[in-house]
Length: 105
Image (cartoon, rainbow, N blue to C red; front, side, top):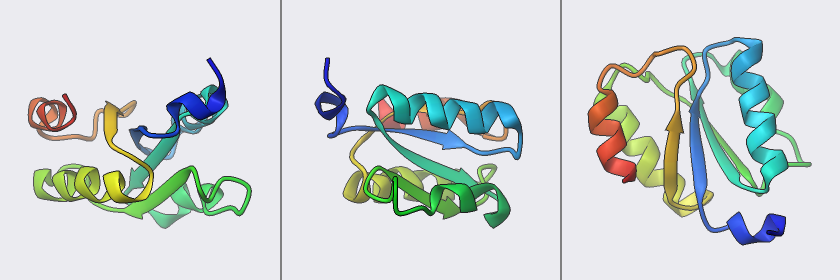
């Protein structure tokens, strides 16, 4: 599979400020998929506002404990980096995991 085969979809990673979350984003990018990163702090997102990945990453400051904001992220990500096919929440910050999972299923 080439890296362009995944270019039409994306994975949403809820950033929690940890090295684990950053590692997950880098693994996703290496796999060729696009990624949406969301976190409560712009500090966690700054590394992904980079010309080297700007067509493959969308970074947004949001509250992952607010289901309405998560819904809006998933909807907007589709327009920017492709349909969200999976959510990775390494820090367990999503308050309504089941609702978010249904949005991407």
